Amino acid sequence: MTDTTETDTTETTPRQIVIFDTTLRDGEQSPGASMNLAEKMEVAQALVDLGVDVIEAGFPIASPGDFEAVREIARSIRGSVICGLARCREADIDRAWEAVQHAEQARIHVFLATSAIHREFKLKMDKDEIIRRAVAGVQRAFGYCSNVEFSPEDAARTESDFLCRVVEAAIDAGATTVNIPDTVGYATPAHMHKVIANLRNRVPNIDKAVISVHCHNDLGMAVANSLAAVEAGAGQIECTINGLGERAGNCSLEEIVMALRTRQDYFRADTRIVSRRLVPTSRLVASVTGIHVQRNKAIVGQNAFAHEAGIHQDGMLKERTTYEIMRPEDVGFAMTDLVLGKHSGRAALADRAANLGYHLTAEQLDHVFEEFKVLADKKKEIYDGDIAVLIEQQIRAVAEQWSLESYRVTSGTGRAPEVSLTLRHGAEEFSTQMACGDGPVDAIFLAIEELTGFSVVCKDFHVHSVTVGKDAQGEVLVQVEYQDRLYRGRGVSTDSVEASAKAFLNAINRIAAVSNGGQA
Ligand code: KIV
Ligand code: ZN
Image (cartoon, rainbow, N blue to C red; front, side, top):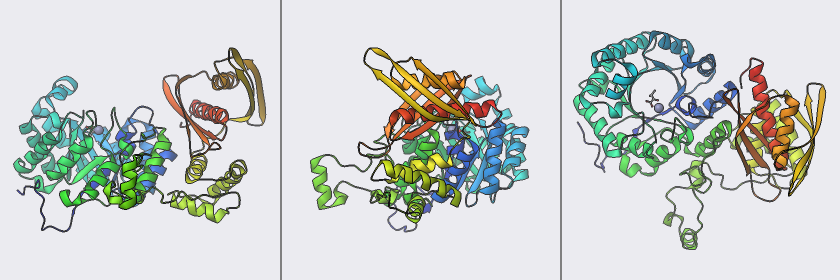
């Protein structure tokens, strides 16, 4: 067995690592990150454009919505393997196959926990029973599909001998990828290296399958642990855009991909990822889920390439490699934030939209162009960020049962705000006047609740400027709870109170859609 820990200076072609993206499955499991069908389709297409090898599109048995999303992605998305998750249970596996069977290339991913803690407390099964069920699960999946992945859940905390036995049995049963999850984010890089090296050294049929890793980030080491696994010989990495995922998230796709690419001298491994699509994809996922990345997030954060210290700026001006190990344009930050204005035409807008990575139909472009003209009357310079929010509003519009006609709020220190609000519902208009709340935003929210009849708990409220300048558009993201479910809402306007009202109404419209039997 080769020791991959030493840098081999003679080898020139990097080893290709398979990128398995689970944003739509593990990522979507993180609280507040759930996406509707249209949003999942959009993210799936962006993942194909990014060059992801395998897209885990969901867990089909989990709910009818999950099933439908995986089936639609399998039917219409081309260019990546589409994978569905299943427990080692017949009904799960049958449902997963039903969902992925029309994919250009399909994969079924079956999993079963193997660690002592999970065996004893969750599954109440002994080791032999685990092996029996794992083998039966893989065999059933293999009966449908030649591309089968098996995951011993909580592998990083599983006894080494038993993990080897399970992995060997799964490969014998037909698994073509064996994925080693650090389900609870407990491993360290040296630990993960040892687990993978051990499997490579001790499982006799290991060369018949690709070894994968799936690291959670509870101790902040998911990327480091995944890199250590690659060093030890893993050939697939499971990761998510922006590191989204259960609890502290999963290994971040953008970080692991750029680590491998930037340090190819060391890892001698690379991926198919089109790195300049990283920032647009990150922004898309942030906007769809409402979970924004922190400014100093590696690779895709707003400050990832910002140099503030004078000594750094001086060095950069003399030679950029003094302080920069990657170029911002390589990960998709625009070299220039091209400015459009009221004289820019439809073709210029279409060109910017395509460069930002959006696939617009002619009809969508027409709508965005109309909104663009309205915005251009309010603000002189329109940046990429403005265009992105206009497009996202258009492509992610929910059926508007309630829309804002007009509002007026007066507020000041020491007195309750006075609000007049008119909403449209179909052909009818409804108005109210109230003196209530604690500030103009609170007053508008209360007035909306009164007119729509939905009383919600506001769980989160964010406002941030989409671009620069005093006339910048404000984007408001709200999260509200209604009957034990969380709903997101988003509104954009150059007037931040109006943006708040729109965001709140957007969430109310999602609730109304679900109340009428639709999808949020
Ligand atoms: O974290 C985990 O163990 C998982 C498995 C289903 C692969 O997500
Ligand atoms: Zn996971």
